[in-house]
Every structure is written in structure tokens, then in C-alpha cells.
Image 1 (cartoon, rainbow, N blue to C red):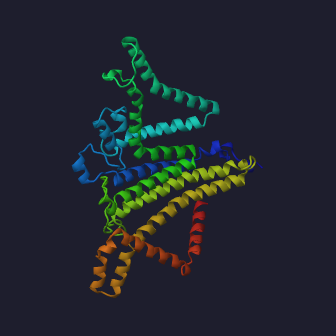
Image 2: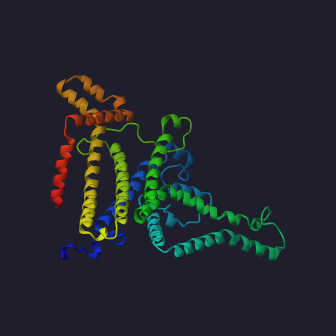
Image 3: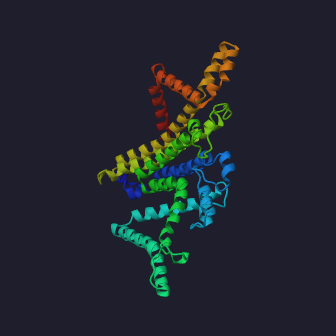
Length: 397
């Protein structure tokens, strides 16, 4: 009977599960993948075209996935409310992300602290924030106008020839901060919402951050499409129309394809690991109280979450490898044909522009998927994966 007793620290209560190393590992993985995704997205989609920079100068702004250019544009047209060391506009490379990221982590910590407090405390925080915000909008306006009324007599707070007596402008001043936050939010809104979703266990926030990244990729692809740029050029730097030669990992994948694949894989890891924590904790939360201390349920939960971690790395690796092979499937087919028929035809086809363009790679990858899907009638994939699952379970045991 003593062996059937589960230690209090190993029960399936949410407060205990939040401290499990598996749960913390998944949350840390999701956090790091989110930060790497932000860095890779900024590298790929965060620059303006050379023509735009030449025409608009270094302080010109284009709707790229980058925050310092917009803030520099605002700073060149007037003083900004946020100090430069917080926004990182005087820094280069990843240093420009340092302070905004620290602020994101601080805000996330405060958010998690607040939502875990009582409803009375949350209501007090909301009221305090609302009062401070209203005071920021109204008190400078009312104070300066009252001082003007005392010293100058009765007058309206707008439309005066002397700018110091147009007090209504003070109400509009806080909106400058709003626009600065918009430029910061281009990059850091999904990071902040994603961090909140990971550590406050919110599926809605995690899926919102994922959708934001996908929207950025889609909008960039639309605005840099050749048919659009001939009519309206907003200054974005388009990605190369050719996927390039496979020079990485022994000729497996090209540098551009690897960058795009990294974005997709990081997005999958962020989404999967973040939602995995929430799904497993939701399962534990609906268990009856007695089951949360039952050794069988505890062992089952441990097996599920340990298996999920193993599958996360295993399946993501297989997906990345399969995608890399699919993108080079045309090269494999032509090389395969060239082995049996050493004619110039294979070399000419391999060097054709149609195959090197992105849509040629997409068609090639689609053919590969058809071949793999048809292979299930020949190769017993289910039996092979069963052997792998059995071997992994033996290793874990």
C-alpha cells in the first residue's frame, strides 16, 4: 500500500504540474523558438529595397518587419516620447531587440502575476490603470488651461495665434506614444502576445501570434509580387525569385530554402510546444480529485508528456528532412535519369529557368508528395513506425 502512495509533489494538480521539468522544458522550447522566429523573420522580411533607400534616405519608412526605421522616421519629424535606449533605434543587429525584449518579458511576468490574483485585485488594477490613463489625457490640458485663465482671462483652449494657449494639443500628445507603440508592435506585438500565451496558458494568444507571423509572410509576398510592384512599390525588399543551388548539408538544400524552412519549423515548434503544455494541463484539470493522486493516472500522464517531447523532436526532424528532399526532388529525378542516359538533355533541363524559379520547386515538391503518398501502397509505413515506437518505448523504460 505504501508503494501506491504518490508523493504530493508528483500529483496531477495544476500547481504541481506547472513546476514539472517536462512542462517547463516545453515552455522554454516554445519561448526560444519564438525569439529565434522573430530574429529570422526580421532577417528575411525586415529590410527595405535599395531603390527605396536611395530615394527616401536612411530615415525613410517602408512597411518592413523592422521597428527602428519607423521610429527613426518619427524622430526625424519630431521628438519621440519613448527614450532611445528603450526602443533600440541607435543600436544595430540583435542589440536593437535587447531592451524591447526585456520589456516584453517584464510585461509578461506582470501579466502572469495579475491574472493569478483574486478578482478583487484584478478589478483594482484595471481601475487604477484607467484612472492613470484618463489623468494623463486630461490633467495637463485642464491644468495649463486653468493657469492661462487665471493669468490671461477667459479664452478658448484652441485657435489662438499664440501656440502656448492652444491647450487642446496636450490632449493629442499621448497619441504620439500610441504611434510609437504601433511601430514597436510591428515586431514585438506577436512576441509579447506569444510570451503571454506560453506562460499564462492561453491558446488564443498562441494562435494569434502564429496567425500574425503568417499574415506578415503573406502580405510581404503580395506586396513584393512583380505584378504588384509594377503598379505600386512600397519599398519592400523582395525575396529572390529563384530558390538557388543546393549547397548546404552536402547538397541537400539551398541557403534561401533553408532560411524559409527554418521559419516554418520554428513556427511549428512554437505552436506545437506551446499548445502541448495547455492541452496536457487541461486534461489533468478535468480529472477527478482521486485520480490526480492515482499512480496509474500519474504514470499515464508522465508517459504521454514524455512521449510528446520525443515526438516533437523526432517528427519535426522528419518533416524538415522530407521538405528539404521535396524541394530538391527535381534535381534527384534529373540526376537519376542522367545515370541511365548520359545525354545533354538532362543537363539542359537541370539548368532551365523554369525549374530554378520558385513555382518550379513547388511543382517538384508536389510530385514528391504524390510519390510518397503512393508509396504507402508498397511500403508498410505503419509497421515501420510501429517498430520505431516500440524501440523508443524500450529506450525510455
